[in-house]
Structure formats: C-alpha cells, structure tokens
Length: 264
Image (cartoon, rainbow, N blue to C red; front, side):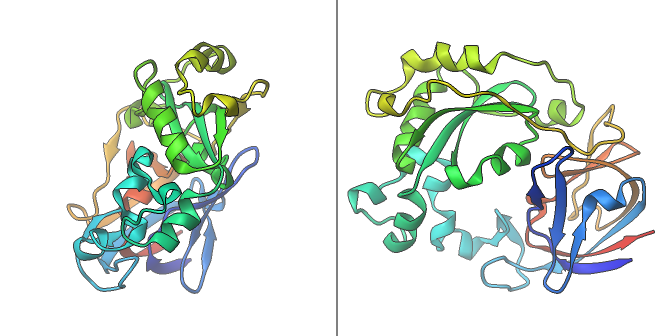
C-alpha cells in the first residue's frame, strides 16, 4: 500500500482501544490496521497548512510568515489567559477569535507521565486527552469562554504541573492517581470568577491506546535530519507512532511535511 500527502495531526475515535486515522487529500488510513507492519516514511517537501507553499515549517504546521499573521496561530492559542474576544478586543481577526474563544471551555486534569492541568474547548473532549497520551483524565470546571479557562489554568499551575514528560509517557512509565481527590483539593485555588463553574460530581475517563510494544529507550525521528525511515509499527500513543526499534515519530510535530508512506 502506498499513500502520499501532507501530514496533519491524526484524527481519533474514542474506543477500546482508540482508533487513529491519517487523513490525506484523496485518501485516508486507519493506522490501527497497520500495527506490526513495515512502514516506510519518505519526506518529499514542505507544504504550509495555510498558504500551501513549499517553505520551511516554522511552528504548528505553518511557515514563518503565516505563523505570525494568521489568527489561528495567535499567542492566545498556547496561552488562553491572553484571550480578549470577551472584551470585544481584536488580536488578529476578531470574528475568528470570537468564534473560537466564546464557546464552552474545559479546565481538566490529565495523567500521562504525571498529573497536569490543561485547557481545551468542550468540543475537544476527549480528543485533547488522547492527543496528549493521557491514560486518565477528569474535568475540573466548564466555563463559557477561553479567558476564564486560561486564568483558572494559570492559578492552578502553582499547585500542579502543566507539562507532560513525553519520553516517560511514550515508555508508559505511568502511575494511576486519584484525580477526583486532586480535583477537590485544587478547588480552593480556582479564581473567584470561575468558581461557580466548578464540576462537583464526575468520574475519571480512562483511555486505552493501541500499543503492542512500548519503547525502552526513546529515539525521536526528525524528518529534516532523517528524511527516509523504515521500521515496524509497534504502537500509537498520543500523536506518536511507535516503532519496534524504539524510534518514535511525532505526527503532529511534523504537520506541514509532505511525505509518502509505504506499507508492507
């Protein structure tokens, strides 16, 4: 089988295990179905996810020019507390910012390598947790806009982590935690504006990833340094492809790279 196209983050479907799909312009691939098969990845060119030009990718699948101009790459994406659409203030494109920022957002706890706090749109639950490789997660608050979620995350970061150790996550060196206990313990630190949105009673969500073998010593594949790679696919976790030789490939981190995929 042969596939070709620009890489974008894998689409997912919640299940036991989670189903993964790579979507190309004229085709799609259920990645679960190629576990234990030999996969060849060949980097062909760049293709910016915004302008489509063959320019080096800067961040988030965009070339440098697009990254600093388009509304979907504004600072408030990574730092929700900088959101201003609720004040009717524009960053790059107010109509776009209102569409994204003025909708229900979730502040959550996820456990992938450790417990961390995060923010996502309500519509992205549980997709966001899947993308982070979390094996368990729970909502803390559901607020009506991104700003309130952002200031809540900032307040809680003083008491719980906000980063994932991706190597630990990929090696599956995990420890189950009582997220309900953590949620209740953190309630006292939620800002006053967000406290009415605290979720009093809910359960943890548990996630199962399609992995036959976890890497023992993680080796990251960088297409700029290694444009051609062949390995046997042994699992999928987060947005990573795991190979039997301990190589891992971050699909989301390689958005905007146009590749060919050979499977046999």
